Length: 265
Length: 275
Image (cartoon, one colour):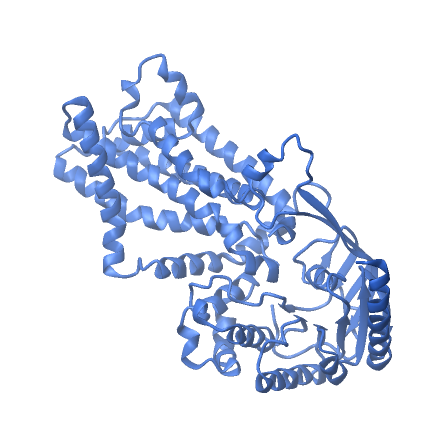
């Protein structure tokens, strides 16, 4: 799916999110079991929890823009990314995607830790719908960019979390997708690699690709984004100039803290 | 304005659009082969000793069970041994599909949370791995059969449709159990008891004709019963299997496959929030 040359022009719509809602049920136990279910039988204890993750969100992402997404934990940022990537279907509303998408969500690559980095890159690419040939052409660059050296042929369980993050970012950014979605993955690398990945993001931006970054690092967002959206409790609160939105968000965090004390959350 | 490449809308209850699903599954078929290959490599089945273990393990198992039969019945013969190995090997194709399939979704968590793809690829890969592990044992059986001096005949070709039915059944079971495991993670712990029960309920340590009339009703509840009996009839005895058994086993396999796949496809869109 990913294309090397970019056919899209600046300000053309890349992703259009219309009136999007997401409600889902999830198990309360981290590891739901039949045993627990049977034990709870007749006690009326609930096994699942309904989560209203997104609440009527409207959002357009244009090519040539880097959209930063901010919000507190549990605001619905990751859910929004998953819906945009087609991983979770929306409950209501519509998402239109005009281009190939590469995702780097919270977990990155490394789907089977006992396999080597190389195997995992291939498997991840094939699962995303790339052909083996496409991965072949990108592989050298991925390995180079990640600076893993010989570790690329070691099982991924031997990797440090930084190595994981480096490989994941390299995969997502090297295949040159039309749209790149990165969810809080920039924060794990060391300073040098962070610099390098920020440069890659700027490169993609000037190449008129669309980027969506979820991050808590405000300085990073101020540096690379030309557009920031602030989500809170599944609602889009504010969208616009990075400075304005981030200032408003920071102010909210200060106020939120003192309000939280009163409410005894 | 160009048309969107992808549109994500709410799903109505039930199945996703099947034609599109199939297309995206088919375009990812290299994933299935690559996945099975790297998984087998990781389990060292690409080395000489790994391959040897693949054959040695079922051979030792059949030796142990043969010993059991000899002790319990007081006597045995070469046909009985051939029956035991043939059915035991096919049984392990199904059992390995189940043990491989049960964790396929939960183990693929990282991939599922990060990428949009037809989730059914994962249990399918588990069954492909089980089939790859099964093939050398089939060769071993043919070898044993030759050593034992059992006559070859064209009726043995009936084993091919039986094998296809068994594979379909294994696929259906793997798909079903991988989906159940998302909701009840302890199914993995029950699985050894289930396969063990299935082993004793199946005509492996005995032949279907040995069962007395009272116990015959057992076969109605075991999809493997008609499959293993037909398999043994064709491959060991060189006879045409009962057509009724073939039809019953085909019914079981298609039924379990369709119900399991429906169950899986209607649920797979929420796997990402359940893992």
